[in-house]
Length: 299
Image 1: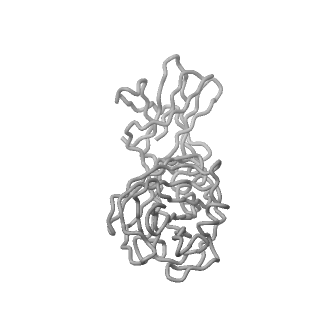
Image 2: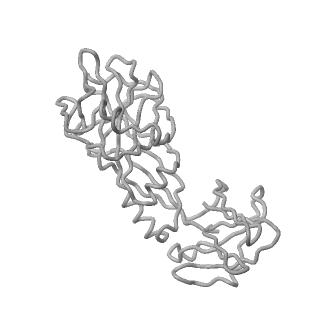
Image 3: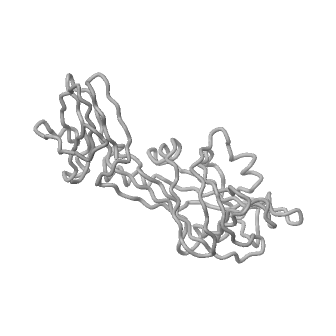
């Protein structure tokens, strides 16, 4: 939900707030177009140059464990999400409300993995999307895709990659969990542009060993849930202020106002001046010396 605070025609401020609102948000589900784990292996079984892109599982495991460290990279194509929200709300007339990564645990069936264990893992947005999934499996690794070595030396960019949060895996070999990711500029920018987006999952403590299904699983593959809602915009119109939103968001959405966000005294803004122009509802507001907050809502 976007709330506009208006004091005068000369000074405008837009505030993103978590104030409850029954806005017409919608959610789009994306599945990976590529994913793989990478591994260091052990001194007796070095896996750092190997690729496992065709394996049926993904994993994140701490480096001090007996079988070494494992990280996972997942790539999503967000063009479908952009097209969906553009159709739903109008081109560029929406804002991202939440993004969650959904993972389904699976059993450790291969001796290269560490036993499952609860612990913390981190997720980061990757600036570099050029990695290749490859065709290696856990039983027959290859060198034709991303490896632990190339992840570290080529694809991780500590200056440009963005942290999306640290999360706790409760342990076990079954069950689905959802992890709410940070809405950084990289995530929001990729969604707005319909870009490809890569996520890196890595151990964040010395205990975690988390195996989960890959996109090659017949069901319960990783899933990115993207929730967006209509955006209310503001502009100067002579001595007035124009508040506008796309008509394809539906007439059920109404403009509401409140002079104090500490209260719940939202009232419907008078629509005497509302017009439809260029596919948008537009309402002209005469500025006063009182602060006002505006939002779109379904009453």
